[in-house]
Image (cartoon, rainbow, N blue to C red):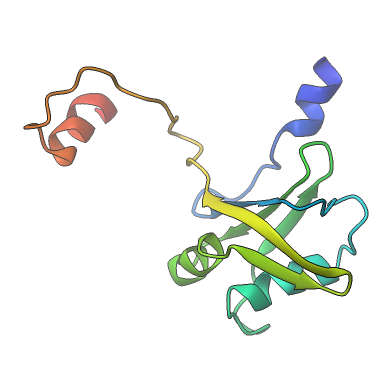
Length: 128
């Protein structure tokens, strides 16, 4: 179990980088896909030129069957998180892409919150 947890961890990245998780569907396996063509297909699906993605860090996590893209550029983050399908040589595959929580935050559900309270007020109460 410890090996699985260690293999599933995301790599350490610079603090100002934002991570986008791309989770393949329809039988696309990260382990079997080309380590060069898959990131290229994701960038193409996000309508990004190769020059725009030069500084990005792309990691393949074969244990979780995900692709982790890290970038400091918000435009690139938004483009990557909006993709729903990638095309590679073998065919077209659906994907789920989303922005991961930052290192100094966590995700969760807060129950019983009054709908009259604004998002900014909730953030100041919880984050601070």
